[in-house]
Length: 230
Image (tube, rainbow, N blue to C red; front, side, top):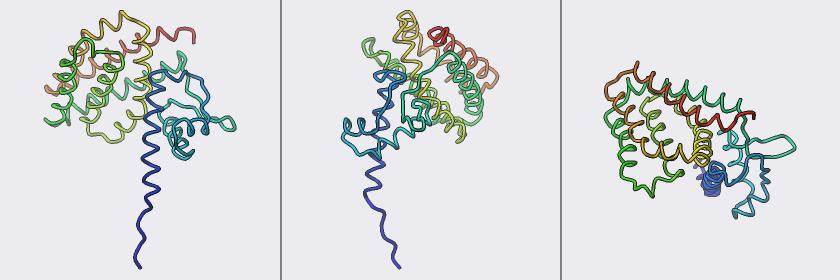
């Protein structure tokens, strides 16, 4: 008996779900959709020109990433964060990043190191005008994601993928509210991150753990001051 081929409708739906997920994620991270806002499936489907299926799948994915909250009998809303949420997210980030730098120091290939350093080199080629909050925050996430990839630890990388959207949202939120941070970070971003390239090249686990702890703690300090009393 010849098995029937897979239906093209399923593949199309999955592609649409990817598009809807990416568009909603971008809007949430950029704070074009404000925290706490309700997301009605019908409204989103009509606005984006798709059926409810891809929207429902996108919302489920974004819930796993921590960007959306789905409540029984109430539907979906954009996640909102307080001080305790920031503390939880950054404490988890620290643990994940320490494990990533440790494994990257031990397991990174020449190609991995080239990819990590490539992000820094690409940043250096940007003009001052191109170094916007949106662009640099994406470089930041790409750099750290390259380290997770270089660790060659599949479960660790999947854990990072769940957390990275929340980190990205914090970066944009913070950098858009503090121009002094922008000026400092934009001018020193490549030097701050080249440190980790050199550490991985030297396979220096001890120094990697020390530097990544300081790096994440600086990030927490910048973000948390915007969530005082929340």
